[in-house]
Image (cartoon, rainbow, N blue to C red; front, side):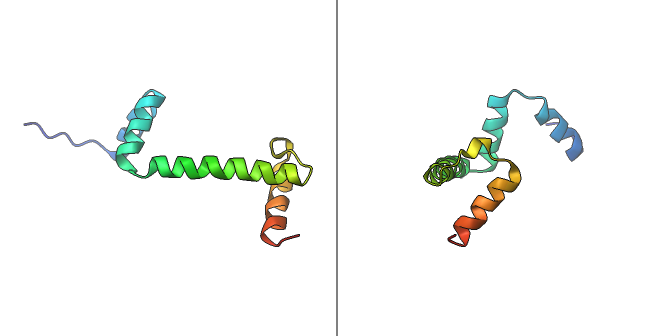
Length: 78
């Protein structure tokens, strides 16, 4: 058996060079709840777009400041 010591920065660079499907496999191995997280992000994206539509807005065309204002309005029920 051979033991190889590789600096973390080099490992990160190697991973960055991998194809996206392989990167996803690595993430799934390191973060077992990645599927749950992705489902939550998808749900949140769908909900914020629906809320924006209810208010006559298009989430995708809002700039960062407008998005922050919408979220602030939602959190403070304006």
